[in-house]
Image 1 (tube, rainbow, N blue to C red):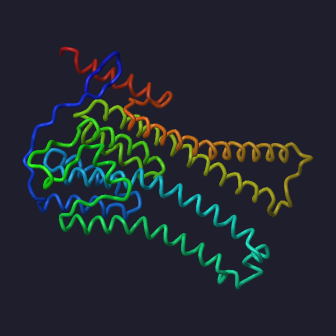
Image 2 (image 1 turned 180 degrees about the vertical axis):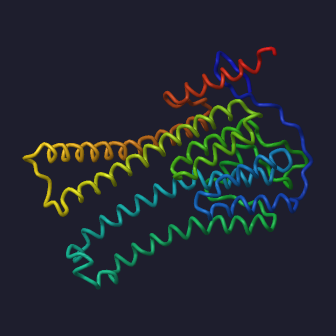
Length: 330
């Protein structure tokens, strides 16, 4: 990595040749753990990063499987979550216009046995099952030393990282270092949809590999800061909305409703209105911030040194100051 004009640029180092060997027990253990960590539904996203960091210059097989598991938990989760959301919305819409469903479930107990409702429930449960089933299949395959690939994701990632199974060539090189770092960074951006636990990806990457790549260090720090900011807005909006609802019930409770002819009653209604408006604004802004996080991950994979508005510049200035301080003679 080099600094050109104040901008971090990733440079590709010429990889050394390595002699291919059969997968070892350690390789398989790291691969199995990385894939199975997806079953924790977000909390285990740090494990593939730890495995990749430990194995990146020991085993191409383990490194690739860990990076693939990271992609499944981050990018794969994003695709799964959005698809799941679309299916749920479309399913509910179809059920609302389904003949006889307008009377509602409460007035039609037999609706739960309706073919449309049964199909909808099967799809919902099936999507969950598919998401959890693939990592289990991956773990079993890796336990047997197989070169497992997730559908769609696996082959594309192998080409992106220049990964070649050991048995296919007499000589091969380490994974493409620049693309390794970019993949880890991009998955950190994509993980913004994983509430709270998504921050573990950039945090772990920064701690374990920040010293080896200024690009990864900067991107991970700004991603972590961006996710912290977004999470705070999310919880702040939820808190204000909950507080506003509680205030509304208190005003409409035993007091018989607010007295709009009194100053206190008018002030209470104004405060309630402001709280709910601010809460609604914050809750609506958060999805836009999530979209920006997905865009950042895409731009990084396309080779750009992406910077978030404001947060990116602040992080870059802070890192530059720290570098200057370290370079000053004692």
